[in-house]
Each structure stands twice: as C-alpha cells, then as structure tokens.
Length: 116
Figure (cartoon, rainbow, N blue to C red):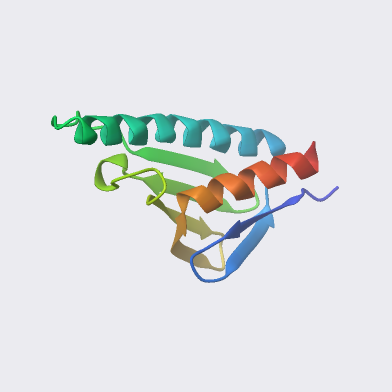
C-alpha cells in the first residue's frame, strides 16, 4: 500500500512526497519546540534584554525520500516571519528551498487531518 502524500507549499510552487503519519507527528512536535524557541527570542527582544541563544531545529526523515527541515530561531524577529530551509532528496534528485514556517505548520496539520 502506498503511503499518503505530504504536500509542502513553498515560497514558489510546491512539492509532494510519500510520508508517514508517525513522521508527520514527529515533525509537528519539532515545530512546536521551534515555536517555543522563537517565542523566547521574541519575548527577550521585546523586553529590551539580550535573548539567550536558542538551539536550531533540525528535523530529519528517511523513507522513500530524505527530508531535512532546518530553522535557526535566533535570526527571526517573530514566529510569523520565520522561514525554514527544506532539503528533499533521493538517489536521482535534490531540492533545497525555503518555506514559510506558518505555511509548513498548516501543511503538516492538513496532512494529519487527512490520514486520521
């Protein structure tokens, strides 16, 4: 049985690939931790203090394709401005591009709703 397709909407265009529900939940958890880091940076900056450096998010999935999602929370002024670097590859092709964090959150949530 074929795995359901996750579609990620990028800054320009989109990409779809086989993805598991378990991997999507792991990615959703990694994004939730990233959001906490982004909020900590934003709160420290708005309070006039120097924010403590936060660890970047590095999510990796290996299945039919290799997916890596990376974001450094220390360089974005707010969670809504944040972008993630996405690398998607297999033995024939490699795609490296940016996506808006808010759009990634929506795409993963929509995928999880579809797969139940």
